[in-house]
Length: 265
Image 1 (cartoon, rainbow, N blue to C red):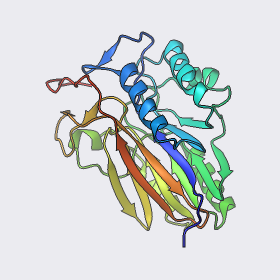
Image 2 (image 1 turned 30 degrees about the vertical axis):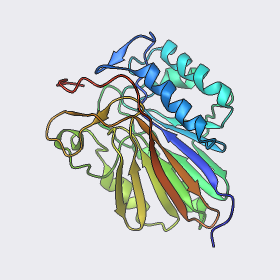
Image 3 (image 1 turned 180 degrees about the horizontal axis):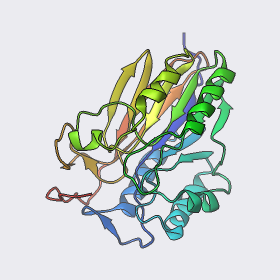
Image 4 (image 1 turned 45 degrees about the vertical axis):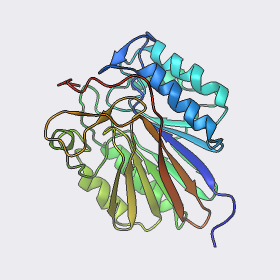
């Protein structure tokens, strides 16, 4: 029987905020859609333990955009962890997303789980890659964790998403990443962003998830760039002390509709 009180984690990803609150991405005012997602999350009274932000928090990579994020997250008072995406400016993030409830730790323990957060950003590129240093650090962290159930997060999915254009800009050295995870049995979950879709991939008993964006969604199984009319969303995890877990995606309707005729991102 599962323990009565799981660790509750909410994943929010691909916010694409701007310095100016009126700016839109592909027809959607990203600040308004993010605020709607936050209201949806709060209405569930769920995000009590961990809030995880898996990259592309900003679209224009300005200090002001991260300040907007900081000011919206701060009242929640939920420990908030983050990784950068391809649109982010890591040095600016490190200078602004530092005060409580934001946490700088990329490896930590909570609720009998070990968490490892990876930087897959390649400055100036849309695709991702894990550096040799990151891979060696990941290997060490998993070794130290022993039998402790482990949750990994990064921006770029290491698995194929079956959209030709997206699969060209996912994690470039996925095989090196898998080569490390395949040696351990403590990794249970890997959470990703980047692809603006709800996806699940299994490998060696590890579940890999991608999560909808808080703004526009990408059309599944598309050859070229295309938008979907699905609503923004976020993902919830229940993490039990024995290493079992549950997850689901929640969608949040918004008034604005994406520009489905857009041809570039």
